[in-house]
Length: 580
Image (cartoon, rainbow, N blue to C red; front, side, top):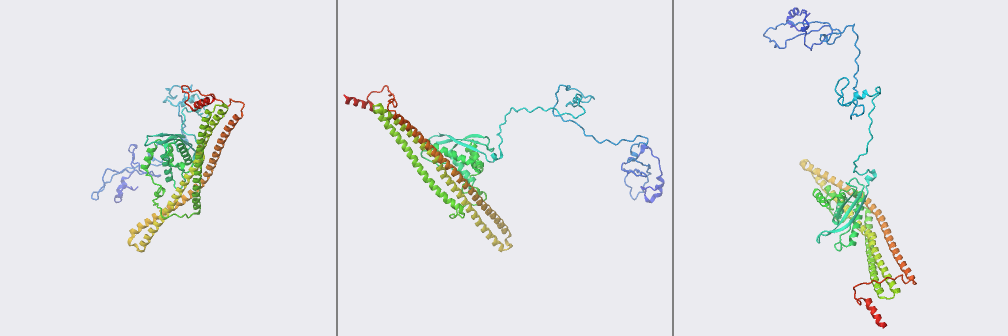
C-alpha cells in the first residue's frame, strides 16, 4: 500500500517502510485530531520539534508506525471504552431530568412537634434549618400535596395614618374652599401702624399640605395677590380688594367693612376654576414666611408689569398705538353695557350712603329725644306722668340702637355688594385693556413681518451675490411669522376666555344682588318688627291707667350729695316757696 505521507520521488522506499508493524497499547497514538474512518484508520505521528528541511540537504525518511483497526459501532474508535457484547443486558433508555421540588419557606415553624434546633437529618447530613424533613416525618397525609401553613389574620396597626381621606375624581378636579378673614387688630408704632388679619382656610384640595391652616396677612398682601393674579392670568376677571382709605382707616366700622370685603374677595378667587389652581394663591394662603417667599420669588422670577406678562414671554412687544376701535360687535355691546352699569351702581351707592347717613341721623335724633324726655321725667313730680315719660325715654334709646344697627347692616349686606361690583367692573375693564394690548401686539408683529418680507424680496431680486445675508433674512422672516402666529392665537384665546368670564360675571351678579336684596329686606323687616313690639309694649303700659305702679320706679338715693345742687332740687324748692 502506498503511503500518502511519503514523497512522490521516493515512493518505492516509503512503500517498503510502510509494512504493518504491530504496536502495543502503551504506544497508542495520542493525536486527537485524527478523524475516524469506517474502513481503516491512519494515525501518523510527525515530529513537530524538528525544523522543516531545506532544499540543499536531502530529506530524511522516518518510518511512521501505523495501526489499522476495524471500527464497528464505537464512534470514538480505539479511544472509546470496550463495547458490550450481545450477551449483555441491553441498556435502559435514559430518564428525563426531574425538576427539584423544594418548598419555599420564609418563616420557621414553631409547633409543639418541633425537634430541637440542633437536630440532624435522618441520613446523617447537615441540619435542616426549615424543618422540611422533620415536618414530613410527623405529617400523616404524606401522599397528598403539602398544605400551606395557616396565615394569622391581620391585626389593626397601632400607628394612625396622617394622610387625608381619598376623594372622588370630581372633588379632586373641583376642590372646595372655605376662607374666613377675622381677628383684625392694630400692630406697629405710630409711623408704621397697620391692621393685621387672620386668614383661616379649609379646603379639600390635595395641593395643600393640610386641609386646614391659618396665616396672618395685612392689606398690602391682598393687593399683591390681586396684581399678581392679573399678570398671571390675562383675560380673567380677578375679584378685586377694597380700595385704600387714608382717613379713618382704624375706625371700627371701616375695619369691619374692609374685613368682610377681603373675605368675599378670597372666597370668590378660590371658587374660580382657573384662579384656584394659581401657585401665587397657594403661596398667599399657606406660606408662613410670606414676605421672605415673595422676595425669593421676585429674585428668581423678576416681576413683570401688567403691560408685559404673558405677551413678553413670546418676545412680543406691547404698545398702545392709536385709539382702539373694537371690531367685534359683541365686545362693543358689552363695553357699552358695563359703562352704563357702572354709572347706575355708582348712583345707587350714593343713594345708599345718603340713606345710611339718614339712619344714623335718626339714631342721633332719637338719642337726643330720649335725653330730653329723661330730663323731663326727673322734673315731673307726679308718678303718673313721670313714669310714662321715663318709659318713652327708654324706648327712644332702643329706637336709636335699632337705627344704628340697621345702618350698619345696610352697609354690610347691600352696600358692600354695590361697592364690590363697581370694583369688579373695573377689573373687567382691565381685562378689556389686556385684550387691546394683545390686539396691538398682533398688529405690531404683522408690521414687523411685512418689513422682514420686504427685505427678503429685495435680496432675492439681487440674486445670489448676498447668500449669507439672504439666509439671515430668511431666518428673521420665519421668526417674525412665528411671533405673528403666537400673537394671533393669544388674542383669539383671550377673546374666548373673556366671553366665558363675562357670562360668569352675569350669573354671579344676579345671584349676589338677589341674595343681597333678600338680606337687606329681611334685616329691615326684623328691625321694624322689633320697633313694633317695643311700641306695642309701651301702649299696653299706657292703657293700664288703673295701675299706678306700672311705670313706677323707686328713686335712686345718692349719698354724700348736698341738697339743692340739681335741677330737681331747685324745682322742688320753688314749688315749696309758692305753696307757702
